Structures are given as C-alpha cells and as structure tokens.
Image (cartoon, rainbow over the protein chains, first blue to last red):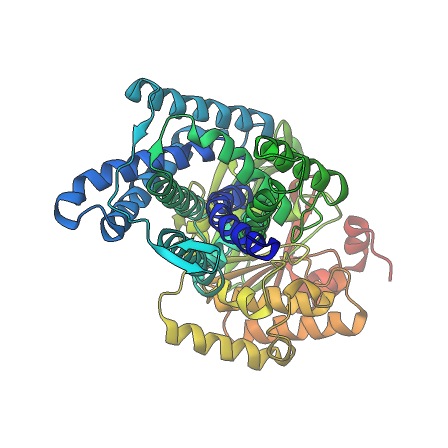
Length: 304
Length: 261
C-alpha cells in the first residue's frame, strides 16, 4: 500500500466518522443557537436514537428485511421518536429553566444526560446489544483502496440530511424564523413568531439528526450500548466549536474536519490509534485558545 | 388641553374626554402599573389611541415611554390595569398573539435581524401571513414605499445605514399589515434630513389608514405630526391634549420636556 492509497483510505474513513460527528454537532449548534444552551444530553439522544433504530429495525425487518431499506425506514422511525423525545425533554427540563441563570440549565442538561444513560443502563443491564443487519461487505476496490458500499450509503445519507437541513433553514419561513429566534427572541415575538414553537421545532430536528446518526452508527459498527453517546457527544461538541458554535454550516464543516483529522491523526508515526481521543481534545484546546469563535462563528458568542 | 393632576391620590385619572377626538378607540390602557423586578416603571398609565390617529407619547429619558409600548406589545406585563385592543383585553396574551392581532411594535434601535438579508427581514414581518400572493404583494408595496430596500434586498440587513435600518424596521412592520403601529424613537440617531424623510413616511402611512402610537424624544417634531399627545414623567401621565394646542403652549412644553430650540 503506497502512502497515496493510505491517504485516500484515511480520507474515506474520515468522511464516515465525520458524517457522524457532523450530524450530532448540528443538534448541539442548533440548540445553542436558539436557547444558548450547551445541551450535554445531546450525545445521549444519539445513543437513544441507536436503540430506537434497533427497535425500529426489529419492527420492520420482517417485512422490509434488515438491509439498507429496512435500516432506512428504522432510521426514519428513530428520528421521529427521538425528535419527539427531544421536544418533551425541552418542555419538561429546559423550558422552565429558560429564565434561570445559565449555569442552572447547564446542570439540568447534565442531569438529563444521566437520566437517559441510566435508563438505558437499567434496560440493557449495561451489556452490548448486537445490532444485526443484512448489510453486505461489498464495496469498490480501486487498487489497494477499498471503500465499502455501506460507507458510501452512509456518507450519502448524511449529506442528503444536511442538504435538506440547509434548505430548510435558508429557504423556508420556519427556517428563517429559527435563525431569527437565535438572534433576537423579543423581536421575533413582536413579529408574531411563536418562539416556543420554533424552539420545539429546533429540538425536534436536532434530536432527529442525532437519532439518524445513532441508527447508522449502530448498523455500521454492529453493536450499541448505553454509554456510546458520551464520547461522541464530547466530540460533536468539539466539532461544533471548531466550526463556530451557533453556525449550522460550521457544525457540518467542523464535523467533517474533526473526522478527517482524527482519521489522519491516528496514522501519524508514533501517534497510535490509542491516542486519537487525546488528539481530538488537543484540537479542541487549540481552537479554544487561538480561535474561540471557531471557523464560521460570530464574535459575540458568550462563554459558558 | 387638560392637565392631569399630579397628586398621588389622583394618578389613576384616565384620559379626559376630548371633543376634537373622533373615531373608534383602537387601543386603550387603563390604569396600567408595570414593574422591572422591584422597580415600578409605570404608575396607573391610561391612554387611548383612536382609529386613524397619530398619538404621540412624550417624555424624557427613562420616563416610561418605551415601557408603555412594551406593555402594549406584551413584552412587559401589566401588573395592574388593563390593555385593550378594540375593547378586548390583550393584557394576558403572549406577545406573539398580540402581534397576530395586528399590533406591531417597531422597537427602539430598529432591531434589524443581523445575518438575515433585507428581503428575509421583510418576509419575517409577514410570518403570520399564510397567503403567499398577499405576501408578495405587500413586499412590492414596501419596495415601492422604500425603493432603497429593493436595491439592497440581498444585503445583510444589519449592514444598512441607520436611516435605511429604520426604513427596514418600518417596512417589516408594514409587511405584517398592522392594525396599530407602535413606533419607538424612529428618529433616533438619524441625520436631520433623514429625520424629515422618516416623518414624511409616518405621515403618509397614517394617511393611508394606519393608526400610530409614536414615542419620541424630539417633542417638537412629534407634535407637528401627531393629532393628540400625552406627556409621561416618572411613569405617570402628567399631561394630555390636542397636539396642536400643546405645540402652541411653549411654556408647558418647556417645563415638562426641557426643550429649548
């Protein structure tokens, strides 16, 4: 394998990883945009989404099979279910805290994270659950380079979801309202925009995207467990910060960059794959030191 | 002109009937108290805005002018008293529902939504409008009224000059199809020539049928434009009357507003 093939291979792997990070980072950044909350429970919605996708697949696999079609339908079901869960969480846990000091709501988010994790822990007994699919192992071989069809479908699905989100936010009235709510809630109220409804929609979409990532990750890696959301939550947060928290395009970009960096970083000589998390969070620290607003962030981002 | 007594026991005195005022009452405040935390900002404020009028609310900085508008649009809650739109209480409605009833607040400082283009800002003004054709038609009307907004429609609204931002804020309110327009300091920070322009537009909007409650620090200007005026001081209405009469009474204006020339 030449260095060139190796580079391309890392690129392909990095794109897959980056797609997961980007989808989860979007929820972080959207929620931060509308209510200035770092929703530390967001990674756990990804985990919940993986289990919801698992449940969804067992519902539909009898009819649709456990190939991409079944997984796709299961993913949509998981997005719907976890989207609703996100809305319920916002209503119960965050909405009453919106007027409280910012630290209170941040602690609430940590509590929600613990609730979700422990609910999953007690339901699964802390065991890994096998996410069985009928996905093949086929792919494209280009010389020494191998890209599986699964990787291609996964990246393409993530891309479609992100393009749909971008269109929603830039072209539809509700998408514009979402951007407007992120800027000035009172002004939105004066224009007749139901700010609470816009916040609910934001949670629905953000949680749904996390669930999409969770289902795809479960299908791709083949197993899921209650703690799977923790690390990706932190990494998606890192991705959102790299891109500029509050910026939707930034979250997509940050996710992809982080996925690629991690993929390449583990192949730098003397930095083995056991160092990859250190590598990721070192990047977070560097970004926070040298460009705290991120690549596309606005300068008036408040510190938490 | 009537002079409302300033003794504490008489602060709830409502607006005195005025023979010259015509038209149905669109908007009324009755004995409104409002607070910011522990601090009382409004004390028994009563006023009326009638169909087709420009009513101006005058007063110095911190007198309670903006708070009065915010209490009407629901951003600040009346702790006592009532706010009525066409005889129906709106004091307990959430702000966005008050806006949906046609009370549109153009706030101090314009509050153009930064990061959104001029066109997007305008379209959000018509957020509640379900009819796309009507929205397009209103957009054309606003562009006709403010050609500069059409020219700049693809620019970030926050990059406009102060005067253009004021036009954008007013255009955004017009997109809504307002029943009553609340204008807070539209002349603030603008060059004299632009102030004249904005005032001309306010007059034109009013002639086209929009009822307006105008808050201004520039009393001279506001009194030239308005039909009826209230003076607020320390959260209380201290004086009210026909704008023309108040304009004549320079001594009173001077005493209450500290306005030389």
